[in-house]
Image (cartoon, rainbow, N blue to C red; front, side, top):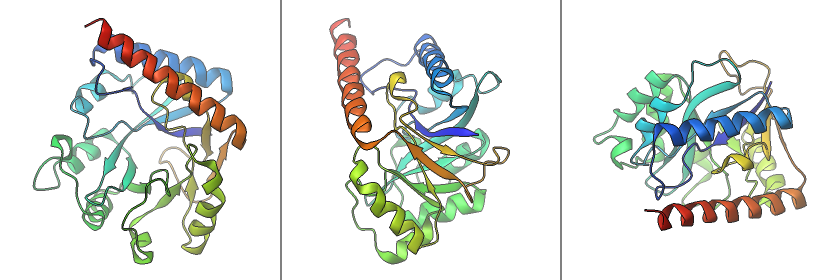
Length: 233
């Protein structure tokens, strides 16, 4: 199975979240997945987004036309972005595992987040691993279940692979798409999806120059969509 591990159903906090908007985004994602030959995605919207749970309610996880796996992108107190995935019920329990809800803006320490995800049986992935990395020590790698490649800076990916090898960690890949047209720039080949296993997975992506060109185009498209939304308010 080919799974894009990092897809955002919400483009930006500046766009109003409606059922119609999320369904439209999902339909476009499905269309592109079929075109590029990828089986599914993990929807990893920012849990700190004010409409995170509203968005989850509108995503058609029950449909079997493509594989849709619930997930979230979570920032820690040291500004390290991480990804989790699993049943929505477990992600809801994770949200409530701290003094204040993650969805209300709480950013836990990395070790606290690792302990909470481990208790719930959720996997914790270091998102776009070397991007703006802060306060990550060698001993902190014990908190991660995998590292994600950084398609925005593909020149770092060989280094990420070497770091993962040194710490005996799997490596995954995802598009980090904030607009549907960015889906499929990177993906992960997995052996099983129920449950989704990280051991033995294989990260894949477009070549470096293609990644840079397509990511730039998608960033420009996102800006145009957000600007249009702001002008029509």
